[in-house]
Amino acid sequence: MPPKNNPLRLNKLQLKTLTLFQELARSPETSSERGEGTYLITSIPQPHGNHFHLGQGIVMAADASGLRNESVWRALHRKTLIESSFPSALMLTKAGMEYDTGLRAEIIQGSDH
View (cartoon, rainbow, N blue to C red):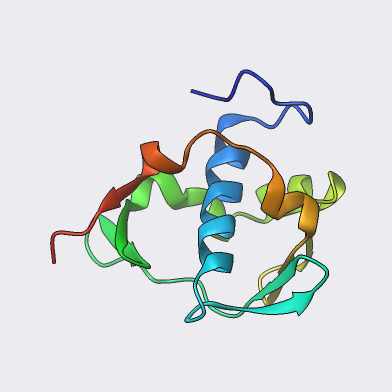
């Protein structure tokens, strides 16, 4: 469910994708900090089966369809949450990192392997 306070009126797919970008930015294995609250996301995990690993968690592939969706990237770019050059480069802005999607606990599950 989208957060009650969604000032940029992101749709569900945009919110899920931003949540995953935030999690990728938190991990030194998939990003590097560029200063002033921005993060260069250097890799996006590939699903195996119906899920993929993200840090210590697991994400269902169905919740990650926006990671490789140019339209989602463009929408997040227009709202200044990311700086991007699809599909090769992604910089999560400070605004993107701080945006409360309300979905982290919903889409990132604890790892069982």
